[in-house]
Amino acid sequence: MLARSPFERFYKNPIIERTDIPYSCNSVFNAAACMFKNEYLLLLRIEDLEGKSHLTIARSKDGVNFIIDKKPWIEPSHDSNYEPYERYGIEDPRITQIEGTYYIVYTAFGPYGVRIGIGKTRDFKKFERISLATEVDNKDGVLFPERINGEYVLITRPGGGGQRGDIWISFSPDLIYWGKSRLLMYPRPGGWGSQKLGASTPPVKTDEGWLLFYHGVRQTAAGKMYRIGAMLLDLEKPYMIKGYAPHFIFGPEELYERIGDVPNVVFPCGAILEEDGTIKMYYGVADTAIAMATANVEEIIRLCQHPYESAW
Figure 1 (cartoon, rainbow, N blue to C red):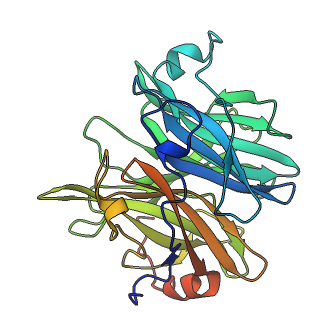
Figure 2: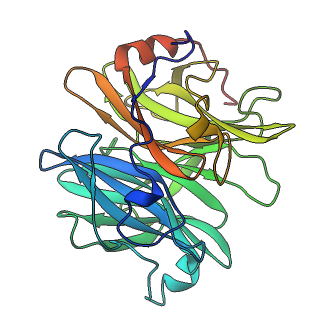
């Protein structure tokens, strides 16, 4: 295992492939993750044969062997308030539990661009949309697992149409109206994520701060490469970066990560912290399948001690 990467891949990766889905589809990738009633639950992004995405539930007792529902759970809305913005699909979900409610943050994709949608469930049977939280273009939304100073906290990546991809943080009293937005992290020229950045998994609370995985994209001669970094945010002032790993901590190496619909991509949308300090990270590979890797949370935190020179 390379010193730069604390993660160990599951030896039977990928854990979910297209052939595991009980109905016809093109691919499965970028799954949200959480624990629900003592089971591991993944919310899979599945791309159908028309190229549009929806979300389907998979359940597991051990975190690696999943039983997948026979039909989608969340599909693009027919409600006139949402339909124009979800017409082309709903993508890249993240799950955050707050006070017994599971909030699902997703990318709504329509003819006007991409926006961040937020919905909720308590039983993973009924799903209720709450809001389209951002304007276009904006994606990679992750919600903190508790209110901070009475407010919900959301990290997003605004930008499109040639704009650079910075990570921003915003606050809300009700999950509908968002403000107090400020820059959190921006791409460094020449770095491993020099083209754009984006939050990957909902923040994990540790004694040292909020641990946030994020992805960085670098343009190479062979195309784009997606890799994963980590940062620690202040527990009370999450717009402050306490430290970060200056190098990427996980990147595409295996064939299943390098070959697929979009090559050279590792893209986590879910991470579960176990009681023994192990993090299970679920990530999409090459926009084609889902894999899992594990790491010790303390080892990741030790990598996040480099001071970050903020734009503020």
